[in-house]
Length: 121
Image (cartoon, rainbow, N blue to C red):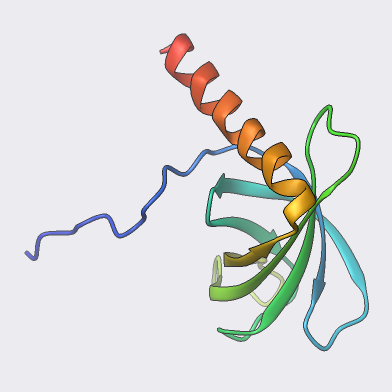
């Protein structure tokens, strides 16, 4: 068995954060919640399939923040959770840009989550 090495640079926090997204080529705004989140990406469930590498625009609704955090990303992977046709897709997104005005809000939120998790053990 090969040695499975973690490839992520940043810790993934399993936290549901409300988000709105616009998929490339689809003007419909969708509302979902993240499954996990990190400094450089996130994972969520969707009823639509995504092509790897396609663009996605995301607004993260950070608790207690006055404005959503605007993020641009690309789909790193997408897979159906089961073989059933009605099964949702799990989608992994890699961030390509975070709006400059929102970076501090986003990073402070992540730092607070990490701090709270380490304190609660």
